[in-house]
Length: 160
Image (cartoon, rainbow, N blue to C red):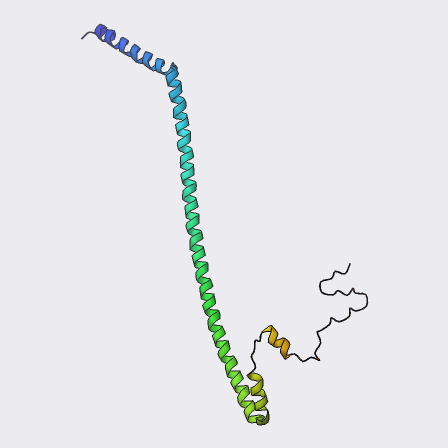
């Protein structure tokens, strides 16, 4: 084949390709396509950032849950220890009481009856029973007078 024929075929093909590319770049559709591609790239970047933040938040949540569970376990263990210590303290107080009661029986047999009667009284009485048990001669407690230079304040009153 002759170079003239090759040139006659190649030059128009190159011209068409260059014209096609220039036409595409300068057309209104190409500008819109470039704008949309730029917006799509921006949206992809935002999506990646949001996904990274979500992943980070989920990791923080898992860490916080783990810490809360560890704290809860420490609280449970603390209260188990407190319970054991209170039980031990109760047993030691019972031993002390029994020791004191045995000593009172051995050393003061004449007062055991009076002590026993006092122990049989209810420890927590109702308010009306306490009022009934109070002797008539017992008056309500009055506040002490204020020292010199201080303003006395009765309950429910302001000093000014």
